[in-house]
Every structure is written in C-alpha cells, then in structure tokens.
Image (cartoon, rainbow, N blue to C red; front, side, top):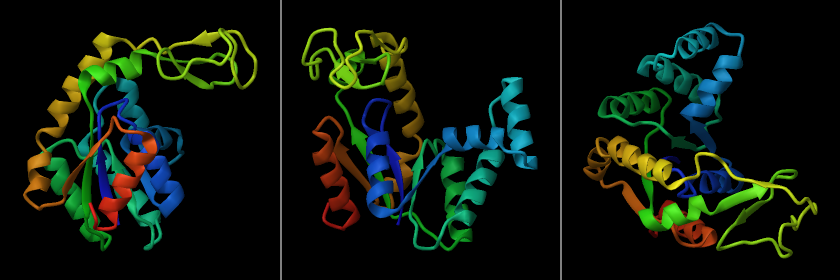
Length: 217
C-alpha cells in the first residue's frame, strides 16, 4: 500500500507516520530526511545534492525524483510507502505516478489530517520540553506533576523552540494551504482523498487512518 500523508506542521503527521511504520512495516519517504541523508552520503547523487544545498538553491524536481527512485528500488515488494512532503505540485504528482508505475506500484490513498488553525496555534505555542532529557510538556494540556521539575529526570530547566510562536504557525498554515491546493484536486478526481480530524486524540486519529486503509473509512 502506498499513501500520501498530508497535514500542516503540528497536525501530528509525524506521529501517525511513525505508527504506520511500526504497525505495518511501511517506509516513510520524507523529502527533507532523504535530502539530508543524501547530502551525507558519499555518492554522485549525494555530492550533487550537497552542492545544490550549499549554494542555497532549491533542489530540483529531477534530483528529488532520483532520490525517491533509489528509495523505492531498495524497498521490499511487501513494504508500503508513506510520502511526506511530496508531491507539492501537479508536475511532481505526475512524476510520482511515473515513479510508482516503474516500480510496479500505485497510489491507494491520500490522507489529510485536518486542523483548526486557532486550536493548532494553541497546541504548538504551548509546547515546551525538558532541557535535559527532552520529555515533552504543554502549558495547558500537560504540565509537570511538580512545578518546574521534569517528571522523567527531575531536571529543573525547560526550553521552547524559537519558532513555536503564533506568527510562525500561521505562516506555516498559509504555506501548507498554498502547497496542497494544486495537488488535492488531482487526487480528488480519482476518489482517493480521505480526511481525518487531526485535532482528535492521537489514538483516535490512528484508528481513523487504519479504518481508511482497511477500506472502512
């Protein structure tokens, strides 16, 4: 099974992808992760990626396609793929169809984790973590049991990501809408788009995705 998982930053897409990897043995194909891995690899393609990224230019669709092609070629026939961050344009969607066909695969589902923007702002801006062990907390939803003390390691120092602010979150939402707008109609025309409430409990989101993949969604 091959799927595209859509959702803005903070929608829980990474968590759901991890669960699909663990539960179904699927492979998450994140363009960002693949580019970073390629840059470190001592291969001709890796050197090409490094040169482009170091120059500050955008990595071309051709390079991204080559990375996906390599990854699909290294996967077992029984392993499904989760595409994360790709495609973002109609041209990339067409390229993905060609890549999948070349490897005897096809796309079965496009699943979008939908969010309420104001609730997402609250979810993200309230996040903080232990500066020592990385345990996650939230101003509203998950405070440490003892004030200013990490439940896991007892550390008293916490940190927040500098980009976890309202302006950044709303900008990310605008970018996400702009990037998904061109591709959703393509897949809606095929009848393979499903939407899940990304603001629901994580286990509920997982159950909804599993129902879709089982043909019950």
